[in-house]
Image (cartoon, rainbow, N blue to C red; front, side, top):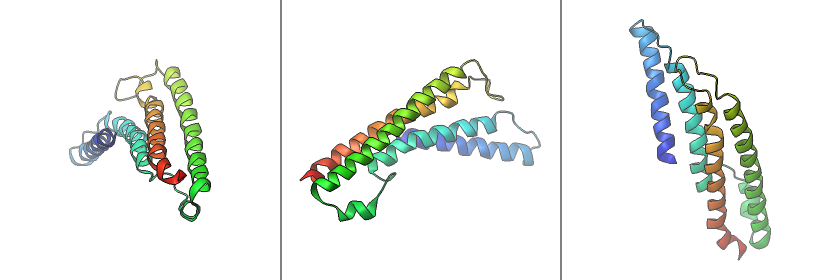
Length: 145
């Protein structure tokens, strides 16, 4: 997912670069670059979340977590994991509903369905949930003992 998020960042950077160059240097403003930048940034964030969560870098309660050992630490890790899963399940459901609602609407400048932008929410949420579970399972062995 880090590679896909990086590609989305590169697309956003190139589209914004073209937007500035086209408008202010070449005096030919583009109609598509702002919309493409917005969609690419949304995809970048939603795909990048899973990478951060997999590494355990997104949600941290370091002060309490470092102080705890054994079962209390395991319980805290489990609570964090379940809270994240609840959040991402909600985002998945609401993002999917929005993607379905805007299927027939077109993005100005790009001429594609608005659902391409909103689909990043359920896709990113699904991968983020997998990242949370993978991080929990990786660290659960050392924490529970």
